[in-house]
Length: 123
Image (cartoon, rainbow, N blue to C red; front, side, top):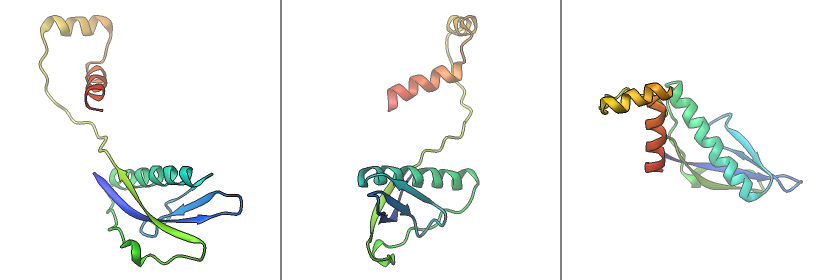
């Protein structure tokens, strides 16, 4: 799922930036430069939303960017996070008997091999 939240970036004296999310209290990060701060903002948002999903907690509605109150020297930007549901699901698959025998002989995990192959194909 995709989420977009306003983030407040505040410049620090050393050229770094502190990032916070008004809608996600406690979700804070830092970046050594503006580019790094934007990268860190996306990573923090993705992890925070993923955590809320894992804990089955409500995901707050994002505020309107224009409604966010900021201190002097700070600015608001929108950050997008694409959060993938990483929970395992059981699927029934069919493969030829000879292939199943080879998988067992090689000591491979059929689930892992399938995940790797699908990741290469889909990403």
